[in-house]
Image (cartoon, rainbow, N blue to C red; front, side, top):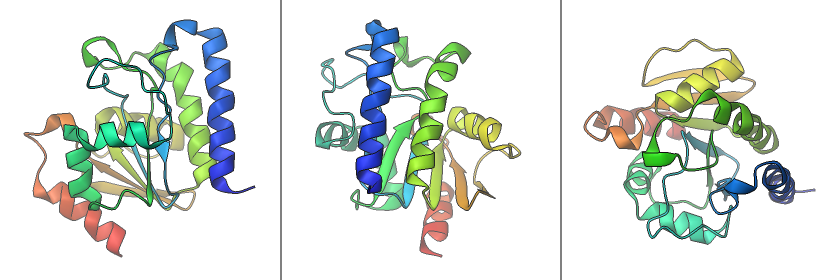
Length: 186
């Protein structure tokens, strides 16, 4: 079975399990989109949809199109260029939080294992961790040291790169962009 079929099957199964246990997440759940397996971007959690409407596609064009028009999309575009065809994007926590607050441990416990499962299926060459929340989650999951931003760690054949979150726009330096591009091009 291809990785695309595996990830789709996995996401459908996890969505069904989550909605059975947590029906209140019905119109909030966003598992990510998966166009390629070489590069995976992981962030904290999805922001609220631009128009307040639920996203009907968890790995399709609707979510990707919405994402491209956000500040995060513009940042990702600067990090990896404009070719979205070869990348996948997911979040540690799969629902927006009220006022985009940092998710609590309960939400990480619910959704973190799904993110790990997505990584196991994709087995990406590069994982770009956007921000401290994603960095801290990955450090705990994969047992590497937290060294701030713009550093890399190789674990299980995957290169984890840590850069600032797009919401920290004032902190984002061209050094983040240069750091990622250097690793992707090598």
